[in-house]
Length: 261
Image (cartoon, rainbow, N blue to C red; front, side, top):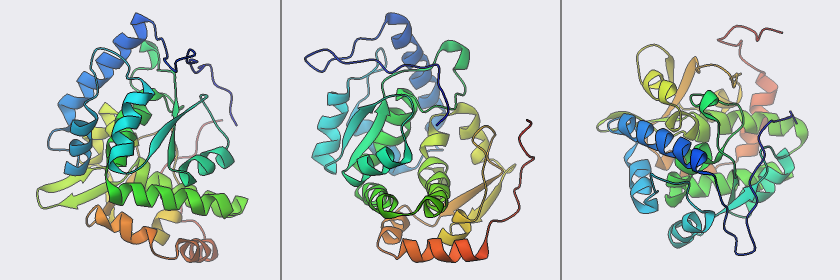
C-alpha cells in the first residue's frame, strides 16, 4: 500500500469523533458545491438516498447517524477505517455489509482531488446508493467474491468496481445520469462524465474488466448501464466466469497516456 499523509480521527469512549471547525468548513464547502451540480446529472436512486440520509451541511456527520439510515433501508453499516486499507480488509468489510469510511477529510489545498478516499467521498459519494437494494446487493456480492478470489482475479474485479461503483453511468428515461461515487464527489468529473467529450460504452461485465484505468486523470471511457437494476442482475450472474473470460482475452490498449515517472 502507498503511504498517505492523512490520519483518520479516533472516536471517544462514546463513539463520537471530534473534528476541528476548519474541517467542518471543508465539508460544508464540498457538500454545498457538489449538491448544486447534481440536479439533472445524478440518478434518481442516488438523490432518493441523499434525501433519506439528510446529511448535515454545516458539519461532518457522525458514523452512527449514517448507520441508522443504512441499517433501516438495506441492513448495511459503515465501518471506521484508517486512510488506506489492504484489499483483504476491504473485501471482508463488504462481504459483511460494512462499507469502509476513513475518518479524515481532505485539506483545502486538495479540495478538488485527492487519491485517498476521504470521508466526503465515502459518505457523500457512496452511502446514498447503499440505501438502494440493487446497489447494496451488488456491493455485497462483490465483497463475497473478492474474499475468495486469487490475487490476479482481484485485479479484474477491481476494474469492475472502478467502472461501476466508482465511475458508472446509467441511462434513464430523463437522460444519462451518474451513479458512481468517484464522479458524484468530484465537481470536474460530474460535468465531464456526462458531456460529449469522453467515450461512453454500453455496460458489459467482461469489457469493463478488460479496460485499464488511471486513478489520477479524468476517465477517457465510461460504461453506461441500461438501468440501475442491471447491477442486481449482475450480482446473480457467475461473475467469476466473467473474470476467467476477461483474463483469457486480456486487457484492451489503454485510452490514456502512460503516467510520467
